[in-house]
Length: 189
Picture (cartoon, one colour):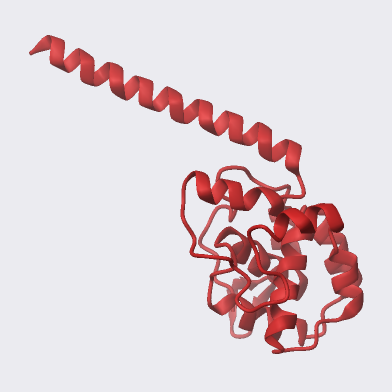
């Protein structure tokens, strides 16, 4: 079961995820009316989003995704949300990893609907080993290496780039303020 404690799962730049819709479609857990469970389709997308943010190195993700795929997902609803949430490439990579692990039969219609195209796949292939398990090519490193490896997984490239510029601006401003404070303290001594 998913127990969500995050306010969002994306780091640095948010995708257009309908968190209100997730809660609206959720249903109470058996015997725990105050504990909401996301719909299987939303749960699947949340698992994929979390896996993508960890460069598909989150060990439980393939098992969780396999269980969710066997739960009778509504493929049309899932594909519609994959597109709306801008998770098509991330979903394709996650399904490719699952398919190569031969844990579960990945539905061909789902894989085809999430195919991001040859150009994007060629870029994704520089960082992720499609058709292999585990799919991550190397170990996860935060900072700029993480940002570079996340870029081909983003279907919202313009929003991603604008968000990165904003994020960089905030980080530069933080460092300038910190530098000014330290300089001021040194002068005052």
